[in-house]
Every structure is written in C-alpha cells, then in structure tokens.
Image (cartoon, rainbow, N blue to C red; front, top):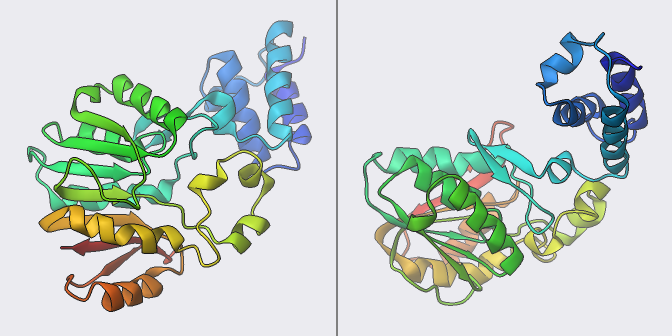
Length: 281
C-alpha cells in the first residue's frame, strides 16, 4: 500500500496548476485521514488504506479543477471560529477580520448594542461579533436566501441564533429594524476589469453578485451610503470593507454627498492597502 508521503507527493504533482499545491494536498489528505496537516507529513511512512487513497484522489481531482479547498471541505476559519461555507457564499478572507478588530475597540465586552451586518453571506461578521459580545443583538441581511440559510446554520453552530434576526433584503434601500449603534458590511467592491482578470478559482466558483460592483467597484457603495447613514443612530459607527484603492474615492463621495457626516478614516491592511472605511454619524 502507498504511504502518506507517496500520496502527498502524487497529490502535490497533480495540483501543480493551482494555488498552494502542497498546502491543498495536506488539507485534503488530513480531511480524509482524520488527522492534522502536520501529521500528514510527520507520519509520512504510515500506509494509507485503499479506500482512503481513493477518496483523497477524488478530492484532489476536484481541487485540480480549480474548486477552492474551502468549498471542498465545506468550512473555513474566521477570527478563530469555524464557519460552514458553500458555493452560495463567498469564502471568508482574513482581511475582513480588520472589521472585527475595530469593533472590539469600540465597545466594551458587556455592551448591549444593536448592529446590522449588510450582505452577511455566511454570517461571519454577525456571528463573530455576537459571539464576542454576548449582549449584542443583530440584523443580518442578504439578498440571497441560500446565503441566509448558511448564515442561520452558522449562527446556530455558535449559539447566537437567538440574538440575530435574518432578513432577506436589499441594503441599497431603506433598512428595516433600525436605528443601529453599528453597521458592518463587506459589500461587493471588485471592478469589472479585476473580475475579468481574476483567477478561475474565483470567477468559476464564487458568486459574482457578491463580488462585482460596476466599472470602478463603487456602485454598491454609492447606492448604500444614504440608507446606511439614515439607519445609524447619532454617534453610531459604520465599518465597511472596501477595495484596495477605494479610500480616497469614498472620501470624495462622502464630502460631496454627505458633508454633514464626520471625518472618514481608512483602515489599512497588513500590506498597507486601503481595506476598511470607518466613520461615525
């Protein structure tokens, strides 16, 4: 029978055309073998049963076709929590964690605040914030009912479903159930050109409606700012993930269309790119 190292080498070779072939192979092998990714290599001389080898080969074939590992496994970690993911929702990105980090500086752990998560997708922001703040209550909104179903399951998984109201709706229209102390959102912000040039792992598998926002990537931002600002309480905060060059354009939109709102701050990611817009009403 083949060893773990034999299969790891074979799988990595089959995955040469995708991102991170070694890591992808380890993750898929660990899933089938029921072990850690480290054990895949550390126990490299252990033999693999034929049925397990066949199952690994099936998963590797899917990955070789470009399917993201998170969709194959059906889960992804975000801010230390495990979330179900499916093709109906975007795969959580670490950049979005900057929103949660800032929320932790805005509210004390025992604060009882009311917040909205617009375009909730798998529910990572609503569920993570509700988990961190046990007295907070949320409205999680999305246009996609399949996405809301995933978010509901994630809320139940982490024991916060009783404090999150899931609403199917359009966040570019007046928002229900306000006013809010906080609004968080990761709206579509990819430009049409960026999407055309993106990896097939994104374009062929992740929902384009949750990614693309017109020629400059700001169509959703322009449409949602009015309803969002109307729904915030005086002193309420907005944290919105944006594209890597969107900071200054959004500042110009705010100064032109909403001059009464206070200053806009741009939070940059670890690479130094624009990542989150922060403002208080």
